[in-house]
Length: 207
Ligand SMILES: [Zn+2]
Figure 1: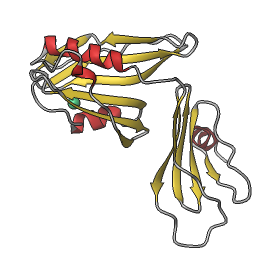
Figure 2 (figure 1 turned 60 degrees about the horizontal axis):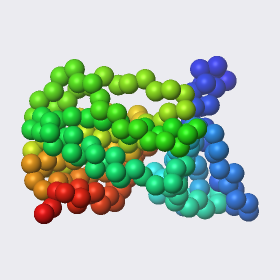
Figure 3 (figure 1 turned 60 degrees about the vertical axis):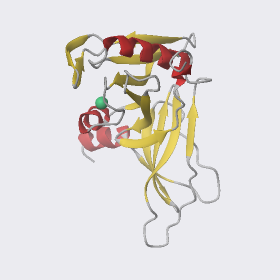
Figure 4 (figure 1 turned 90 degrees about the horizontal axis):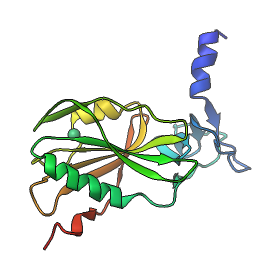
């Protein structure tokens, strides 16, 4: 096989799910396609995440594969809701302009950090930022941005920006109101899974 194909397929190998034993799951950072009796799946492993997400229904012929179950596990204890609350307060100050931040998890110390991103251009309908460089133990877990006075939703620009990445993305909107709107999702190589999220703005927003 061509060396380029070997390299390409090494980045995203396709694995047949066994029928009579458990699938040996990916335990180092990477991605695989799983061919299973119940569909075609994406398997994603990161220091902070292990996920299996179904991409397509089963193919329409009998296949010699086993079943794969849906899975989403985080390598850290709990999502840092206090940092989302902190971001909301900072985004209120900057509203009606948008703003953006990363919530970073340190794998070695288990510490979280909220980092407001440096803007190169910003207004009420857009924010363009410089992406920070992380230390080797640091991982981008949540990518947050605000929509100023408009409501929270993932725009086409957001979908395009998130396409190739593995992260939790969050949008916060209606920042002039006591109860802001919020939308969260897990993005895994262009597959987006909505995540439930209770807005933590209760401490102070509502009187
Ligand atoms: Zn947006």
